[in-house]
Structures are given as structure tokens and as C-alpha cells.
Length: 504
Image (cartoon, one colour):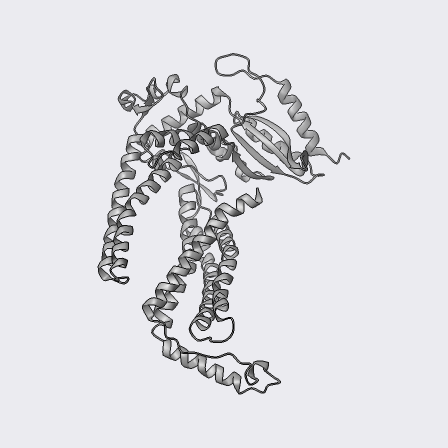
């Protein structure tokens, strides 16, 4: 028996791929997939002696939807030399021009049916509203529009071909065994020029946003537009807070009321600006028009669509609610575990900062915060994985529903880890400070009454001292909030910036 069947299939498939020539949209004979180019790269994991059926299934699915495929052995650099990665193959996927134009036309018709404003490309490559196509959908199928497909549009269309369910014309790679990642290749030259250009200016204009949108897509461009708007709006509370602090008004109901009004004004203003940007780009309502069915959706029956009358896969709403109810105990258990851990850390930190008067008091006072920060990333990763598994089990049909339910579950965990600490400080410890101090003193007296052979700290001169809590309530809450925010920022910075550099 051949022990290298996946690799043998790789070699035969690649040889056949290089020998085969395909004909593109204009009838000219094309060449095989260039070695330096691909729209997406799929990471395929397999055992060294595994059968090649899973790999062949993935390649067949991709070829069936009209995509060009080339399979290569994954390599990694070691001691300056490239060595093969055992059990990992890379599947390079590219979309021929004719197939891409067909998908582009299908997407434009779907947008038109969804109520989106049809757009067209000008001679300069910019988008503008196409008034003629609003009444005549045949004008949507214009080759000049397809000739100006941006990199972001190309990636969106090819990604849909790779991940969409087979019933919607996709390859459904998300459900294929062995595929653990679908990665788009970066244009390093564009990234370097982009960073160099933005580093020399303070603000970005609509031309910068257009370039980002054409290269990375609408969501990324809107993200940068939001960040700039948010930073500019933060100038008002920053200046107001500085003025209030300079006049010794750290806690002021006027400043709190100003922040509430500022938050409402910013939210409403950004909602209007977001709608204006979406309308200007012609993507207002794109979520409804381009709503796609999840590849992992598993239907339990077929039903007639109320609008078109066609038979479509569905899943019982009652079953989904039962599955959601089954997830409640799991979420509650993780929430209680987090609440118990935070309560323990809070009690330890309060004791060390407010009542402990023994050796290394300052150093020990930092221990709970360090312990909490060290455990928080692992707990967050576990909660995110559990929330993802529960949401997948609930079997939502569309990506938007799936993302909304996943966000709601993660929000519960993040709310507890971000707000429970402050809640315990402001609403438990501060009102019950005297009772808490009496309990600490009673516990301390009990420990001192134990025999010396049972508790070495009970020996004369060896025990730690106990002091009374004298920190004002407002200062206590302020210190807690400051330390928590600073710690959270440091942990996020290390996780998002430092850790990837170390793992690269």
C-alpha cells in the first residue's frame, strides 16, 4: 500500500493542471495558474498516511464552480532553508476572468432585486449612479463594468464561490473535511505605500477612504471612517474633563450629564454619517441584498418561499429555541464561574490594599490585579469558543443572524469581566465597609488565637498587622477604575501587537 497517497495526488493533480490549458473569456488560450498569484489560499491538514479522497473532494468542489486550483506542499523556513511541513498542503485558488464576470453580473442582478441603487464605472474608474439601469435591468450586464472590478469586489465574489453552500452555487468549502483556513493574499506593495501615505497626514479624506474601500472592501473603509469620526468627537470630552480636573471637580454631575449628552449626539451623528457614506457608495441596504445562507446550515425540511414560491431549505423555529434554551445553563455556569473568580480577586485585593499592614504590603497589593490579568485571556478564549460552539449548534440560516447571536453571547461574558469589579466596589464594599472591616478583624483575631504549632504566623512578633480602611469611597472607585482601564489596555496591546510579533 502506498503511504503517501495525498502527496501522490498532489503531484498528479499539479502535473495535470500544468499540462491542461484553459480558454478564458475572450477565446484566447491561457496559461496555468501563475506561481506568484492566487485569489485565496486554503490550508489543508491531513495525516501523512491518510487517503487522498478528502483532498480530491476539496479540489473537485472548487473545480466544479469554475475555479482554478493548484496544490503544493506547505513549506517553512528552518535554519535558513525551506523544509516541508508534515501533514499540511496549500491549495492555491484563482478565478478565471470569464467566471468572474459571470459572478459579477449575477451579483449586480441580486443587488438590483434587493433594492440597491445600480452603479456604473466612469472612464476614470470611479462609481456613479446608473439611472438607466434602474428601469432596465439588462443594462446591468455591461462588460465595461465587469472590466473595472476592484480587488475588494474580486475577493468578495471569489470568497462567495469558495464558501457558499452548493445549493447557492458555491463550493461549500467551510464544511469540507481537512480545510482549516481560507486566507486571502496581501498586496505588500499596496500596504507599504498605504502606510507611508497615511503616516504623513493627520486626517484621511474621501479619496483615501475610496482607495481603502476598493482594496479592502466596504466594511474596512467604514471602520476607518468611524475611527476618525470617533477620535475627532473625543476632543470635546477630553477638553471638558481636563477643565473639570484642573478646577478640582473630579466628580461632577454636570460633567456626567455632559458625557451622556455627548454620547447620544455622537451616536446619532455617526448613524447619519454612516447612512450618507453608504448611500454615496451605493451600498445602502447591502446586508439585505447580499444576505447569504451559511454553508454550515443544516435544514430539517423544505418549504415554499412566500415570495417566489420556490422550495427552499428551512429549520424549525421551535427546535432552534429549544437549542437556545439548552445553552442557557452553559452560559449561566460560565458566568457564575467568572463571577466567583472576580469576587475572590476583589476580596483579596480589597483586603491587601485596605486592611493589610504587614511586610511587602505594596507588592502584595498588586498581586490580585496581575493574577486577574494573567487569567483573563485564557478565560476569554474559552468563553469565545463555547459561545461559537453554542451558536453553531443553534443552526442559524444566515450569516447575519449567526453573527448577531454570537455577539450577544460574547457580550454577556465581556460585560461581567469588565463591569462586575466596579459593581462590587461601588455597591457592595463601599456601603458595607464597616461590616467587612469587622469580619476581617474577627478573622484576624481567630487566627491569632490558634496555637503557634498550628499557625507559625501566630508567634509573637511574626504576625502581620491589620489597619482600618481609610480610603474615601469616591477615591476608591476612581483608583479601581483607573487600574482596571490601564491594565486592560496593556493586556490588549500585548495580545494584539506583541504576541503576533513573537509568534511570527
